Length: 389
Image 1 (cartoon, rainbow, N blue to C red):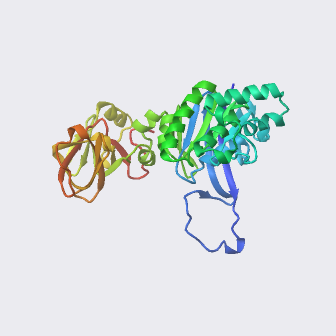
Image 2: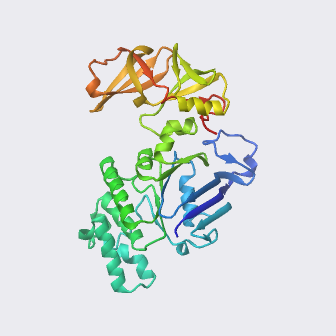
Image 3: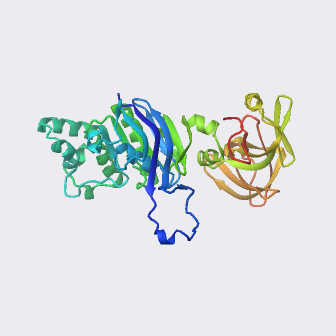
């Protein structure tokens, strides 16, 4: 079994600041917690990864996702907590003995070796018989469609081909767990799309546990069985791509997942018996029955809120929230309208091209509305989704 369990995993980097300068206060570049022990890069990280599950850690730069992956790999010491691979506690186990393989952003290929030699290298170190090495290398090359490049050196390959070689080098080791640290970030957009599809097919063929790190929410949404969204060393939410899209736990998750980004409004949440309404810019919308039930179960009362609505869930109407178009972007099958409401809020509306009978030039007046089933209400105090704990 290649399940991976992280219990209260913490990573603290010692504070290297000169003690003589401790009296000087500087504005921190991030919101990572600083203690007497040092900077806390990962905070009480808890996650159970099932055997053969594809987990994606996603978040902005500096959120702790790569640090977490490196702790799983054994490349970073664990400051606190317990890490299990299979049923074995591996906190102090050397990386080579963890039965993992890691694919890096930078490929990390040996430039003086051929593709075949790069892929075979780890097996030669383990003194695997030559015929077995040859079989494993050629099987991996066939899976990744790089058989024709086995005699070439890395400098003769494109970025996408080099990354396939790096993945192939990991495959031949037949690891219990595959770790991938932003493997597509050095590729152009077209190659990223192609390699994403290749990784999906690869996952089906080798059927092992994947832990994948990225800052790209598109990769997270398309690859992961579940995604773990991180910020400032803390887990913000764990769920399937659909769960975090439909039910973001807080305003950060709501803004990070989904493109274009979710629109937000200053609004008022009004309770009338067991029904809830949101009032925004002289428009009142009743929330869907399931949303009302969740709010009522938590006894949420009248209050000012941050209202979130995704661009694809706003529709144009005769009466509604008034706005003025600033920019109209033709995207082929749809038009992205950037509009400004009368209170100065910038919002984006996605209009299907086939329904576009109007010319949305700069300065055009539009009216917009949304359904009560797609409205998200967040606390102004702590930005959590008021429907959920």
